[in-house]
Length: 115
Image (cartoon, rainbow, N blue to C red; front, side, top):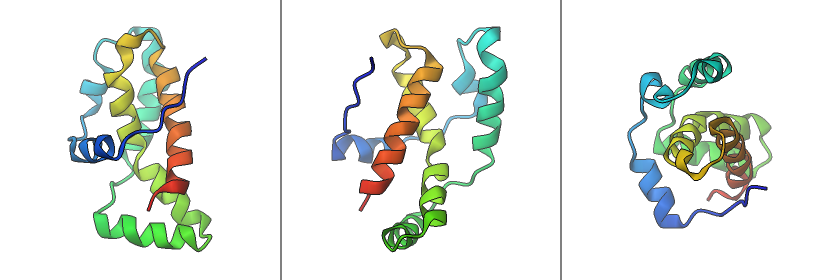
């Protein structure tokens, strides 16, 4: 079982400042069996543009008003960050795809708490 840990606000600031790696960096050290689904996933999320700070604020306000499209846009725009964080935690003995899945669950929960 994977324990879900809420990130500290300082960690969130650090993550926000990280550069977004390209697919080659994210796929480094993966075996051939891992690449098919993961390559497709990374290709999909790479096409989703990142948000500016103003866009995040606007979408957050719309989300607070119940706009499900705004919530979805906030989530989709941050999927690459989940992959980045998952890659940094691969040495902990959990499959990379599982780390991404747990990170995505955390992103779903965190999006609802974002101010």
